[in-house]
Length: 205
Length: 256
Image 1 (tube, rainbow over the protein chains, first blue to last red):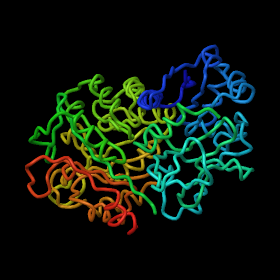
Image 2 (cartoon, rainbow over the protein chains, first blue to last red):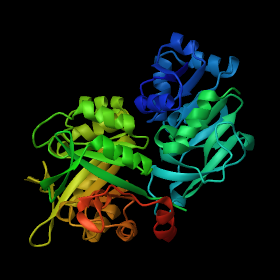
Image 3 (tube, one colour):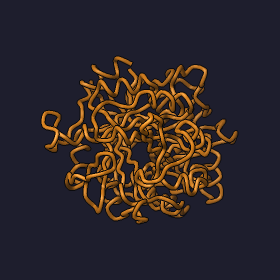
Image 4 (cartoon, rainbow over the protein chains, first blue to last red):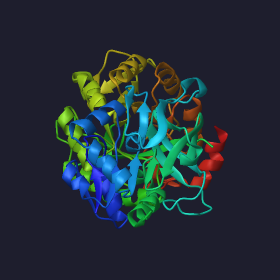
């Protein structure tokens, strides 16, 4: 069972819809006991980083998430804010994150944006830095839906799975062992996202 | 290549898909779920659904239908119509709607925008400005299906919406609605330059050249209704359509 972590932020119904369409079984829960029993974890989220961490703390979820991701090493997929929370720090609210990636979350460098407006809201092509079980090895350009004002900046090159361009190249997917984070929304990205979700349902890192 | 969002807008009334011209004479198009399935197959960037009479009739959003529609949407979905309390927005988000569009309530209960933005993030709160052009060529913002005039001008209201926390502004030119005579480009220029948040142009589009014009005038995304619903060669026959990625790349994305 995939547990979609409900910490009070994000459109969980859409993610549940897409997982079911991808052939997976899922449960939406913010209960630490339920999360402890998960085979896979999906960390969703849209909204403010500091609010996200605050909710995780107030629901007492940090310990169980750390245990699942780092000790038990079950597959974990973070989407949008859920990806960002895996970093050690965000300038959105100047608070620490879960720290699974040696990375910081920073606002788009607006001085490099020309006339582009922030948030980055819309579809962008992604450029994979290597191969990963969640992405098909196909010729066709993969495009995904993004909504964000902040993006992750990694210390370690090898954590970067994909980048996209908005004003400049930024990291839009990170992976390390059993954890993967996507800045974009596969649950809102048609067949491109469905493919990623299908692969997550089947993934055994 | 920079992609621009191209957003079909579907009007609903009493559970049916309708198209109006200048907020009048609703033409019945068909079953909204069927239309959404077609737009899914065509891989549209995003979809907007507006209940065109909910505010005027003081009706609640049709949650059952919206939930069914959201379940079919594997692209972002925005919903507007009849939202005047934060609770309604929460219910819509729970159904799988990504963005709520605040129209009439922005004038009667402006706090709703900031309340929702703080709670759900600016990216999920859209304010729609319905702008009409008067006899003397002056723009007038209207609410409640175009029946009530607002005092402030479009750019002042757009700034107010952005300051309240709206993550996006849909700039709807009523006088262009269903006219298929191109967007109101000076209006787009004026409002886009006034705010830092994305402005979505709506009203008047005939096709890709108009989308390009709107983007060059400063819009961050474009929306349209008639052009995606009617057959281009026979304006009164219904043909749900959307440009291919190839067309969009060649005729739009590569030109911006």
